[in-house]
Length: 158
Image 1 (cartoon, rainbow, N blue to C red):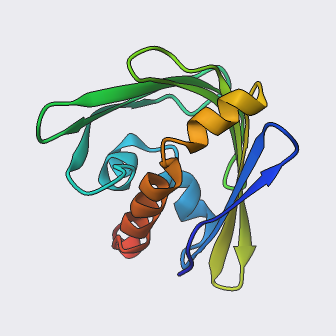
Image 2 (cartoon, helix red, strand yellow):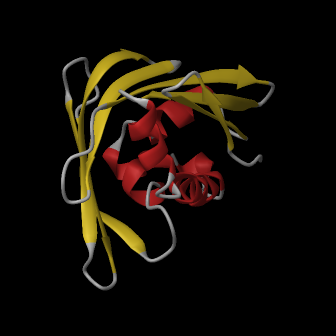
């Protein structure tokens, strides 16, 4: 429905905004239910998520593991801090590339917008250097590829 918009705020925050043609409850499920996450949160074509854990409750653990056709991979771990279904998710995550990155605090808000939803994701990094390193990976391209895949999913079947 729209492309990802990425803005920098202050020295450490990244704000990503995107509109979807689905209600907030479906987007909330798509961000917390492993059966759905493994269908869309894959980054660029050619990657899969063979392992997904998402214990969507305060203190619950997160683990996503990605692999490509050549067998290369990386993973992410984290913990949920707050959940307000279907409107808001706050969690902490760290990537293992293979060494762990510093914690990234992520707040994702889903706001109804007509028949769709505006998703706003604020990522708060511990320093400007960490934010720059994260952005230098080209992460927004993988995020947008995943969001396009989510947008093209058969929402009615969820």
